[in-house]
Length: 133
Ligand code: ATP
Image 1 (cartoon, helix red, strand yellow):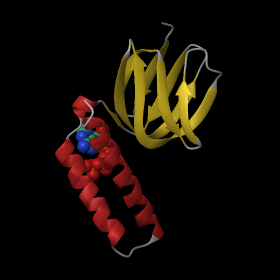
Image 2 (cartoon, rainbow, N blue to C red; image 1 turned 45 degrees about the vertical axis):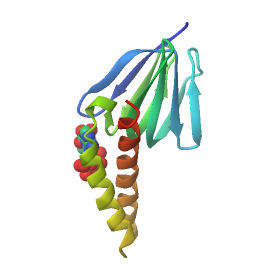
Image 3 (cartoon, rainbow, N blue to C red; image 1 turned 90 degrees about the vertical axis):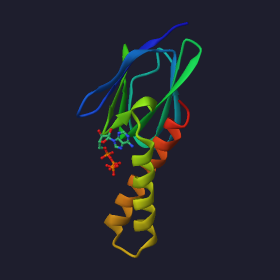
């Protein structure tokens, strides 16, 4: 089956560098499936799990915002943070979820509200990905 090179990079480290047959990501305009020979494209990504299809298996990675660049020869995801299922501390994500929900439930300014929403989304993405390993 044809494939392409996928790299997922954060400011801290390279999280993933391997071949994939297809990936499914959540762009700001909706879900996108990327197959080999896709036209070049750059899109911001939502905080959401991405799915990697490789050799008949599906793998998920928690990708916490950033950009995807589809190039001729490879796909690069530059994420603010990203974790493989086995690297996720579920208790930490649950605690972050509770903190965020508490903040969302109390009255506060818009900036803090948006921050709490994003923190909640990161926590839910991590819990989701860790649950599927
Ligand atoms: P917390 O409030 O628990 O720090 P956060 O969403 O604010 O969560 P980030 O700023 O997105 O955390 O990430 C900071 C660093 O910690 C990144 O390297 C990220 O990969 C890592 N990280 C955050 N939460 C977890 C988790 N539950 N399990 C493993 N690594 C995590």
